[in-house]
Length: 450
Image (tube, rainbow, N blue to C red; front, side, top):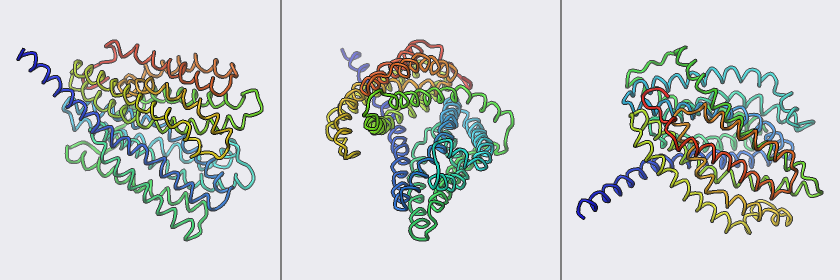
C-alpha cells in the first residue's frame, strides 16, 4: 500500500511539474498573441477619425500586409522547433546558431518581398478592390508600411528563437511595449501633427523597427555569450529555407480553406447575403479570438516537444503530448461553454442590426460545440510542428483542403450549414489527420535533426 501511494504521489508531482511547464510558456504566449489584434483596433480607431476613405484604405492595405506576413509564420514555428531540439540535446551554442540563421532568412525574405510590393502598391490595392479615393489612401499607406515587413519577419524569427529557448516572457514584453509605442506614435503623427494616413503607417514602421531591434539584441547577446557566430551561413540559411517549405504549404492550405468558407457565404442563394456576410464576419472574429487561447498551448507544445525529442526521450514526449491534449480538450470545453452561454448577448457588441444578432446565435452555438475538437487540433498541430513533422502536416493540409473545398464551395447551403461543415468537416478532417499521426511513433524522431 505504501509503495502504491508513493507511486501515485510521484505521478501527481510529475503532472504538476508538466502543467507548470506548459502554462509557464502558454500564458505569456497567449498575452503576446492577443496584444497585436487589440492594439490594431486602436490603430483603426485613430485612422477612423480621418474619415471613411482612410479607414477603408487601411483595411485594404492591411489585408495585403497580413497576407504577406502571415505566409511567413514558418519563421516562428520552424525556428522554435529547431532551436528547442538543440536545447534538449544540450547544444545551446548550436541552438543559437540556428536562431541566427533564422534571423538572416527573415532578412533575405523581407528584402525580396519589400521592393516588389513597394513598386506594385497601387496595382495590388486595386486588385483587392480599392478604387478612387480609397485606392489613393491604401496605396499611400502600403508604400510606407511595407518598409516594416523585414522588421515584422525579424520579429517572427526572434519570437521563434526565444520560444525555442523556452522563453515566452521576453516576446510578451516586446509585443506590449511595441504596440504601446505604436499607439503613441499614431496619436502623435495623425491627430497632433496632421500627417494623415501616412502618419499611421510611419508610426507603425518605427514601432516595428524598435521591436525588432529589441528582440534581435536579446538573441545576439545570447549568441555572443555562448560563442555562436553572427555571420550569415549560406548553408544554414538554405537549410532553414528548405525546412520552411512544408510549413508554407500547410499555411497556404489553411488560408485557402478559410477563403473558401468566406466564398461559400458570399454565394448563399437568397436575399439576405449582406446579413449573412456580417454575421459570418462577427462569428469568425470571435472564433479567431478563441483560437488565440488554444494556439498558446500549441506554442508551448512546439517548444516542449522539440526539447523532449532533442533530449532523446520518447517517453517524455508521449507524456507531454497526452497532457497537452488533455489541456486542449478541457480548454475547448470551457471556451465552448462560455461561447454558448454568451451567444445571445455577444451580437450586441458587434452590430445594431437585429437580423445579424438573431442569425449569430445558432452560428455561435455550432462554433461552441466544436471547441473541444479545436483544442485537440491546435495542440497536435503544435506537437507535430515541434517535432519537425512539416512534410506530414503539408500533405495532411492538402488532403483536408481537397475534401473540404469542393463540398463547401459547390453545396451552397445556408450560413448555419456552412459553419456545421466548417466545424464538422474541416476541423473534423484535421482532427482525424492529426490524431492518426499522433497515435504512432514515426513523428518522434529523436536527436539533433528531425
